Image (cartoon, rainbow, N blue to C red; front, side):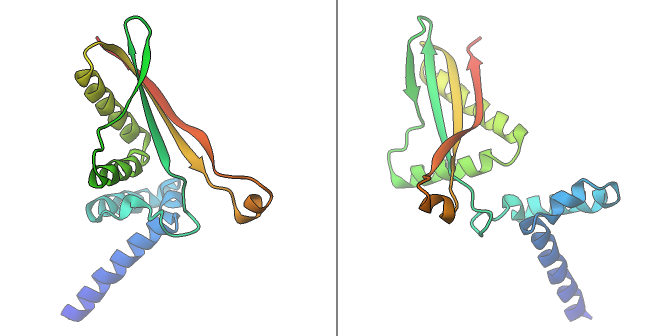
Length: 163
């Protein structure tokens, strides 16, 4: 009996993760009949961290995100700002943060707001922070052979004013 219950739990776990990896979960969310199952899958994926979409599996390899922040002072002078990343560990943490940034629109806005608050707090002369995020677009092998290379495309942009 215990073995069957554990087997059923393991099978359910595998199916829920498979729904995320194959993007079947996104198809379920668009259909009213599957909405409760999609909601349960969302909750479970959040609790088990399976909602990361496993982008390191092909063919869903996505391009890196590049975050650029620009401070603007009262005279209109612009200068770049970035998080201090004095060692490799901090660089990896910031890189990981950009992966979480791209999960949802609301998440992107929260991350951008927190970056802007940090930038404005560290630079009292700044009146505005402009945040621009681009994504590397990776060509297919056939496109690469024809001469196309990795390109940056706009992904997200916003600005925040000091009040």
